[in-house]
Amino acid sequence: MSRTRSCLRGRPRTWLRRFRCPSEGRSCTHHPFETVATDGGTFPGTLDSRFSTTWQPCCGAARAGTGTPPILFAVALHKASFPQHDPYERVYEEFFARCNGLIGRLASNGDMHRCVAIADKSRLESRLQDLMSAWRTRGASTGAAIRPMRGYAEVPLFVDSHASRCVQLADFVAYSVYRAYAAGDDRLLDRLIGGFHAEDGVIHGLVHLVSRYRECLCAACKSRQ
Image 1 (tube, rainbow, N blue to C red):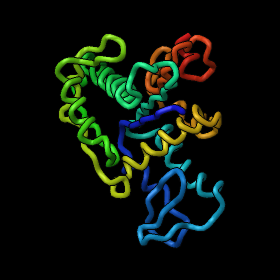
Image 2: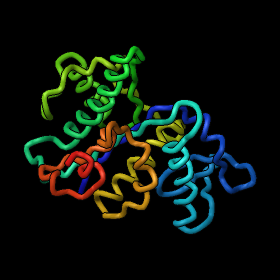
Image 3: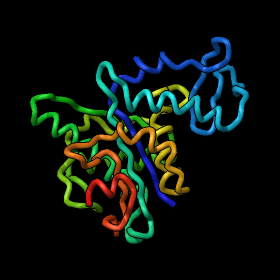
Image 4: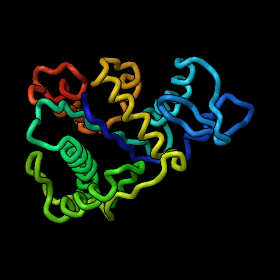
């Protein structure tokens, strides 16, 4: 099974207003498995109809034509390729390093930014905060030689995903990557692939950590071959 993590950069509030739940004005939260009304109920319909409700915000994010377009990041890990590494640490390290790299490239062009990672509450909260403190000062330890991640203004912050549409959107991206790499179902990921950070034909935002990447046919690995 693959471990996946994702995030985005952009202005989700602007385009999320375009997508309303099909229930006479009821507000809702969006999750990959179901669309949940804020009054605690769920919207009726088949699994396919629920997916269509969540796909639209994802596609809108990846292909937003106005304002600052979102930039997507995600990491999928083939655990058997890295038996000596803790899967959570390896994935988060790579993920945070990729986002930090974008901040550095923007800074080199005079576009200065600092970033803050916001994640869904989990049992990894204290552990990730400790790891980020180390990565910000000493750099990575399990992956390739990675410089200190100085693009982050703070350790990761954790919120309830039901209260944050930004985190819900990250859930959509993570689920699409999970389905593609763990279940061989790339229908969701195909709709989002154009939204991942890429330069000169190489997809930097979508990372598949696998030892024999030159033999892998996924979009992320093929762009590096």
